[in-house]
Image (cartoon, rainbow, N blue to C red; front, side, top):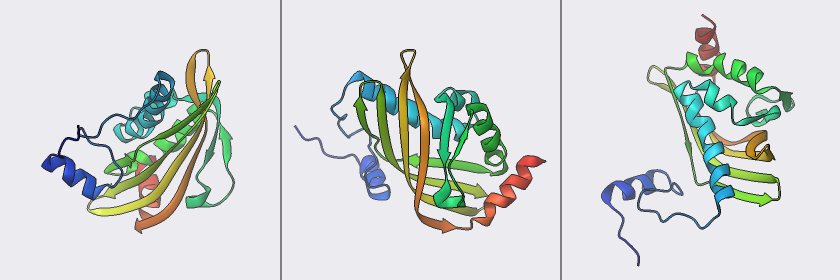
Length: 175
């Protein structure tokens, strides 16, 4: 049975194509896929909320972080604590951030998994906005019965607004 979309769900689906709403039936899947989706979607929500301990818990003891599509350079291998320190060196300098994720796709093979999702990252200082848009890709491993992210890649495909806000945010966060 197909249910009609509510006005709110229609507005969300038009504004964010591909984003699930309360009217969207849940995807078929298994408990491990649900655990992976819950884990990877918790990361941007935790960072947007300043809950760095929750974000840190999502990562393996050593994680590869790749933001080369935004900043250039090479992917970096670091501890989750070092990653949180890096994020705390910029994110609190914005007045607000919101990383809207699209549906997460998951593939599991034994104790390894991959996940991907579209992301629209919004970063404000005052009414000025910087919006890197693209996709996240995560590699995960099952460690002691829990899924942990071992690699996280942001692949930027579009950028709206002023990237210079990142420098302002770093300066504000350092104060």
